[in-house]
Amino acid sequence: GIDALRINPGNIGGEERVKAVAEACRRKRIPIRIGVNGGSLEKSLRAKYGGVTAEALVESAMGHVKLLNRYDFDDICISVKCSDVPLTMRSYTLLSQQTDYPLHVNLLLSIFSIAAEEKAGTPAMGMIKSAMGIGGLLCMGIGDTMRVTLTADPVEEVYAAQRILRAAGLRRDGVNLIACPTCGRTRIDLIPMAEEVERRLTGCKKNITVAVMGCAVNGPGEASAADVGIAGGDGEGLIFRKGEILYKVPQEQLVDALMKEIEKL
Image (tube, rainbow, N blue to C red; front, side, top):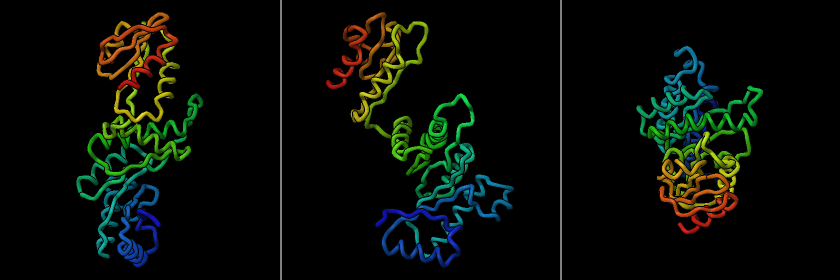
């Protein structure tokens, strides 16, 4: 009734139990993910390396691989993780240099926000950490499967993973929405407009880039790579495609006009 199994071989009570799991998975053709994390690293390795280090995590993982291999099991995926982003990245980088087994990239925990001014800190900081750690590894070509860990609705983890894959250039389906950071030339209320475009594009599977720019002076040129976009003016705005201005519409019609152009693509 399962597709895969995750175990930490060092924590399940001895080699005979590891053997029993390996034999059952081999019979059922179920892959095993070796999951090593800083919180349950063996005491002997902590003592050897003076704490939780990349070398200690990798040595633990490779020791577990050898244990499974001893019982004729080789359908293996590996993860080495902790809540520290640089340490996690060093661990995966080192592991990728030592083995060709598939790597499952993940961070151990979300960071809870302790800054009073940060709203919704838990999922927000978890997303930042995952984007840095997982996204950074993916951009280096490290990682075969992934999970984003957030202290939030688990569905949000899937959406976050999709965004990271798109940002890393590994997922092509869905809209790439870009927007300018606003400046003194901005003549429209850009942030609500960008949010409205994002909301209305939810579920769109077209592999396109859509731009929401704040001014007609530089907007079309700066977003010339976009398949279609809008650029705000004073009470009106431009619809453009690949940097070429198509037509001008009143400001209140900008988003509707943009959506019509997207439908044509």
